[in-house]
Image (cartoon, rainbow, N blue to C red; front, top):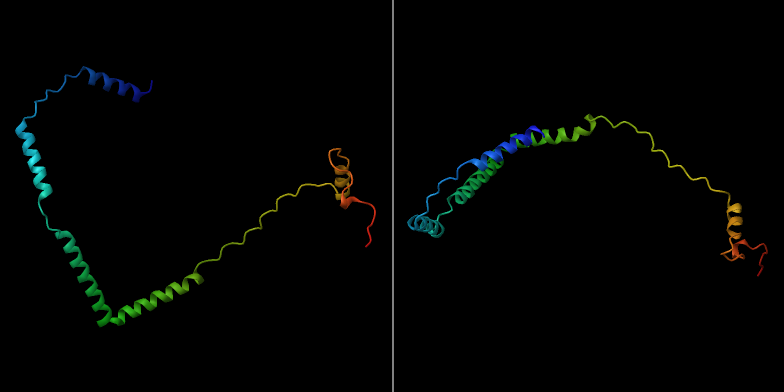
Length: 141
């Protein structure tokens, strides 16, 4: 028995021998107070301040970004050109991948010559013995 199993068995034994907790019965007044709080919480009309604040912040951020682009385009254009040049030069900086050896071809099965295969097929008693492509005679029109 592992250490984990022994500890589990001791925990189960301790839970069996522990006295039951004394639970006081819940009064009807307490249940009524909790129910009234729940109903009041559901029916209260809360303003959606966090969403309004988020839209306001987004509007301010968009206005600041637009003002930055319109009134101060020099640094933004310079940074954009530098970033574009860096991205364009990236393929020249990355080393080429090493050449890999071609994948080996799968081995081809060794087949008998066509004449011996046809001769073997013609010896099967289940098949017709006179195939049109095995005929010795030449048909002339």
